[in-house]
Length: 57
Picture 1 (cartoon, rainbow, N blue to C red):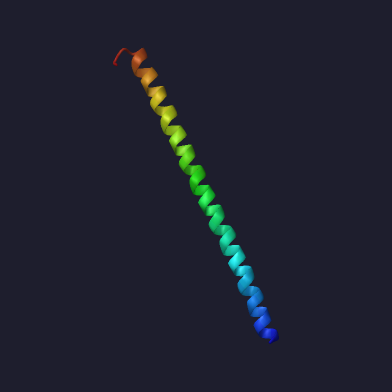
Picture 2: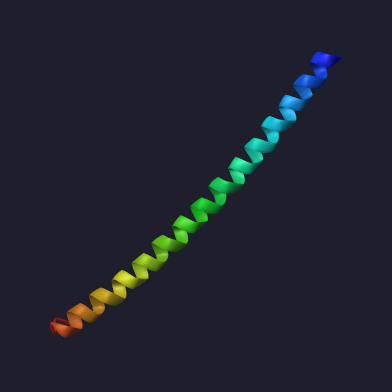
């Protein structure tokens, strides 16, 4: 039973670690998505201003 208790403890620890890692990966992916969208919007705005200044649009 001592070995079983140890294995349960290790499994619980591993599960907690896996869930924590999964949450971090999810939030990091969402953060990257937000940054990418913001960068895209900024780039479109910047390019629009550039082309308007050059009177190409």
